[in-house]
Amino acid sequence: MATPLSEARSEGARHVLAGGALKDLIGLEPHELEGIYTIAYTELEQGQLDRGERTFRFLCLVDPRTQRHWLGLGTIMQRQQNPAGALVAFSRAAELGDNPTAALRAAECHLALGLVEEAIAAIEAGLAWADSGGDPDKTIAHAGVLLDAVEQFINKRDHTNGPTGDA
Image (spheres, rainbow, N blue to C red):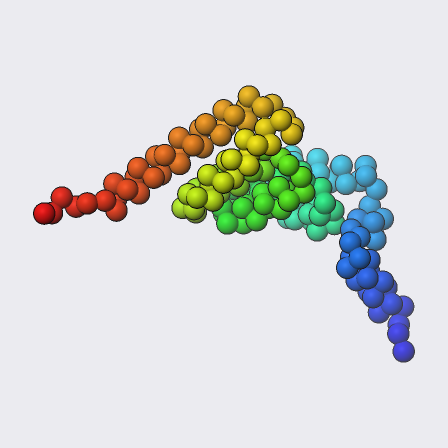
């Protein structure tokens, strides 16, 4: 016999599996989500990275289709020196729509992980999406800085792994 709690769990699971968001299931209103986002962003700006991470994770859990929640989580993780975790968040943000910032921040993470080819592909995506939002000139400048970093990474790698001079 199903209890009210087990029925509620089943209903909630069906809702989420059908593509629904937890925010709808628990009744979070847009202004409440905006308030939580403001708290998360403030924590990020004030350097309260652990608290901010928890708050952004909550936002990503209850409203996973909002790109800026994933961008915030990725930014926090980058500042925490967690490029692998940040890459997951920025990649999710990019999946939600063409966003040059998500792509270029993912490129930074790829480069931090030593994944040069992936970094270049992400830079190319960022440039392709330059007109999708924000300031195209800023996007192009950011991509240029990243391409310089890629070049430096390759030169350093080639110098480190290059010939030893022993003939």
